Amino acid sequence: MLIKNKLTVLKNRYKGAQIRTQLLIRNIIAGFLIKGGSIICIFLLVPLTIDFVDIKQYGIWLTLSSIIGWASFFDVGLGHGLRNRFAEALAMEQNEQAKHYVSSAYYMLGGIVLILALVFTFINPHLNWATILAAPQDMKEGLSVAAAIVVYSFLLQLLFKLITSLLMASQLQAKASLVGLIGNITSLILIYLATKTLNGSLLILASIFSIVPTLVLLGYNIKFFGTIYKDFKPVMGWVRKSDLKSLFGIGSFFFIIQIAAIVQFQTANILIAHWLSSEDVAVYNVCFKYFSVITMAFSLIVAPYWSAFTEAYAKGDLAWIKRIVNKTLKIWLLFAIGGVVALLISPMVYKLWVGDRLVVPMLLSAFMLIYTLLISYGSIFVMFMNGTGKIKTQTITSLFSPLIFLALAYLFVEVALWGMVGIVVAIIIANFYGPIIAPIQYYKIIKK
Image (tube, rainbow, N blue to C red; front, side):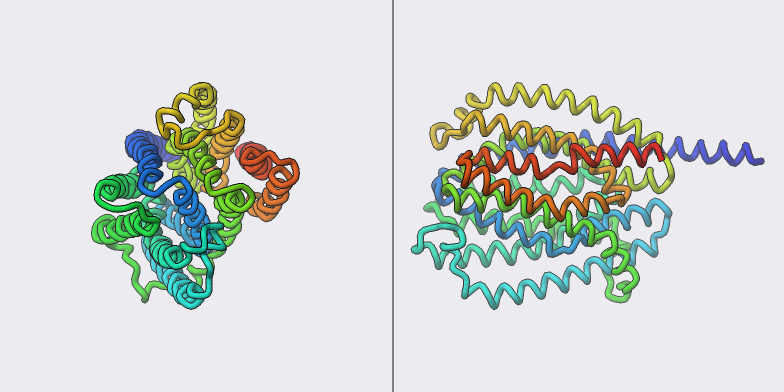
């Protein structure tokens, strides 16, 4: 009887692993098609956007969007907390518990968004956005209106984006990724039409890039809560204090990690704008966008792992996890080789892409490649740590990494005068958790 039970467990585990692997492969293939379209749109948007306004206004827009990006940490980790808890509940077939998690997350984040909107409404008239963005003072009024459009849109996106947490928790990564593609295609069409019919305007640019993704996410909520998540639709009566505590428990760790990431990645544009120039912001972002193709492509492979790892770890299937990680490390080596080729041909690509509008230094490209490869390598193990909820060490390092970044960025840019290269070197050093500590943690956990 004991042998029969063990055989049944093994059979069910093998069947579960097969289904999990099939879902993973399906998500990766669909992700490549979807993200491939998004990458093409992003590449086409850069020269179109620069032509619509000019390189200085484009740099100002990038700086503004970076500052607003700071608001993303106000979800206090609820999105990631919901993703993990919802995935665990589905894996254990606890649908009623899953309903509580969804309602609690939506109503709590809805309250936070409302408070933030009221606070911004009060303080915005007193902010000089021209000074904040290192822009000419005659742009002050227009920037205030643009900032309002961006902030209100972003806050709504913060709430509506919870639907993508549910999709990823259900291992429907491809459907979640489709949000970006729809938004990019729509923005591309609108920007193209604007270049043909309207005079260049930062306000129009901000409106297109802010309102379009908000409407796409709203449509996603209406669609999926009317179909596959009909039984999980947010209802006030399903909100429970104990569930909020559970979501915040793991969410608070993700909250700290999010702040660290925002300080490092969103602050880069702001620091370059103030220490160097708005034109340098544009140069830095063109270089970043070019090499981010590597991280975006690699993320298509590893992004579905998060919830797959959550399910596999909850069911004790460590063999499947180990097998997937080993295969992914081999794939990463191929990406590293491709990255070196991308570096060698980068001057030609920049020329074809943005023409003579700006010049990207080769040294900046070289360090940007190093950064993207290290981030991609670390992401394999970070996905495992996030999926299993073993993120205390990651949280602790996140408390120090922003301070390390800001100190090194000042040293390399203002003292050593390395310019934009100094920013990238500071980010590389500050992001030591992914490529160094996470792999050690992974091997310790996998070997019990």
